[in-house]
Length: 324
Ligand code: BT5
Image (cartoon, rainbow, N blue to C red):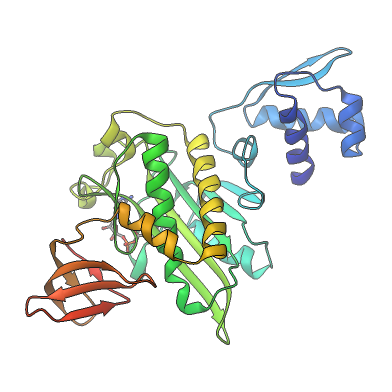
């Protein structure tokens, strides 16, 4: 059902605003004209407005704002990312669904989206607040042919994509705080969670989760994060439709991912540096064992963090948090 429907959308989309006859559609999809009609009724349930004219056929006159697999795929210019897309109104965590799909051999590029997460998660079992309809709560299933030790580069790659789209699509000036935070004016706008499944030195798959606060008003955040969290709307005074924003994210991610696969991390590093937060400044760094003041020197060619302590001793960190 799903793939016929997305083919149907593509056929109508190729001839945007023009009628496509039931005969043409039924031949292209190899289904009866009454089956076409049933699909049109399903699309209407998703919020599409479809005009059916005798002897002319069908055309889509309005694509809904409502998030659904169909609305995201309508007009999505990617080759593989999000071409298999699952949308839910409410889930515990999109990460869990993506892991399940991965274990059922779902394809590279499968995307899981939800309007709301009731148990959204951050790193180290922290929770991620995911209010209904106001943000992008999305997990991508990736099967990159890279060594497992390079997997953290995916987080940095995703961070540059988020920053790039927030800049071009929303006119913002976001900053990336190593490794996985996107900030605006020092407050957290988005977070990334990269989960890896590897065996025998080979990546089985990666589930890359992104949470972006888009249309929240300040008071929509729970009290405990009100002083640290922000949203696109909070920062720009404008609300944004989620569908085109998600499409821009998927399109940009696919482009940058292919660039990374072809040319390696170097180009991503340059982009990352253009958005980097507090490079050359003194910060507090925290690892599992200690917390200390250090100068943030930047990132290494492999994406690791380079800092210098107050005695001038340089250190390269693979896992740490920049506190402030
Ligand atoms: C992250 O963790 O920043 C990763 C967030 C990833 C969320 C996505 S949403 C789609 C997918 N499905 C999931 O279940 N997760 C992924 P971390 O660096 O550990 O930051 C977590 C901390 O950020 C929390 O302890 C809070 O202090 C804060 N926080 C929680 N929700 C927030 C929000 N909506 N906006 C800003 N900060 C938040």
